[in-house]
Amino acid sequence: MKKLESGRSMVEMLGVLAIIGVLSVGGIAGYTLSMRRHRANGVADVVAKYALVVYGQCQQKILNGDANTPSECSSLTTFANAGIGDMPSGVSAISFQGIESDSGGVDTVTINTAFTDPKLCQALGAITGTGCKSNKNVAVKIKQN
Image 1: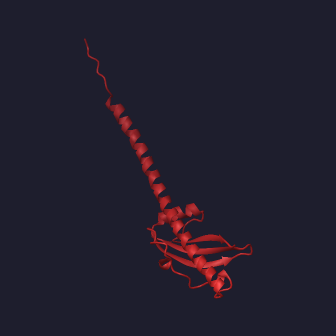
Image 2 (image 1 turned 30 degrees about the horizontal axis):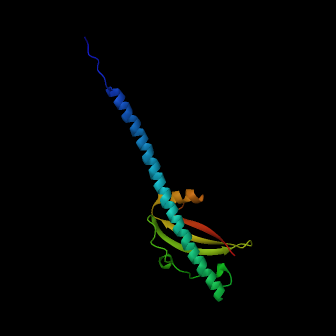
Image 3 (image 1 turned 90 degrees about the vertical axis):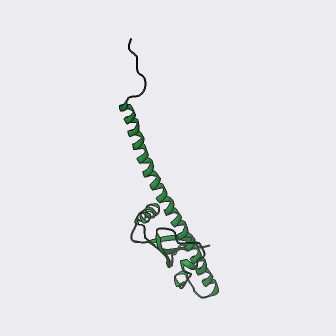
């Protein structure tokens, strides 16, 4: 009488390992993309906070009579003195570039962001839909009351 062997063959086990490997590679790629987008959203939040600080200071200058329009605002606070925290990782500089008003009562605060991480710049460009350059201008629109 022959004894029947039970269990899995080596080919079946290698097939399972190959499937697990392919799924792991896909998972790692997705995780990396997700983390890059998370960091880009963090940079966008910091830039928006800085734009609001600068815009508030400009409005205060207009109320004090030191400026007539937002485009006349100058010498506003630097990022380091804005009180909104540290520079995000992957960013070397965030600076105020200017404020422009249009006829519809919408002011656009332009903040210049210089990146040290090109992939972070690309991720922020994908989120904002503006593409990426070595120095990225991020425009934040704020509607006047």
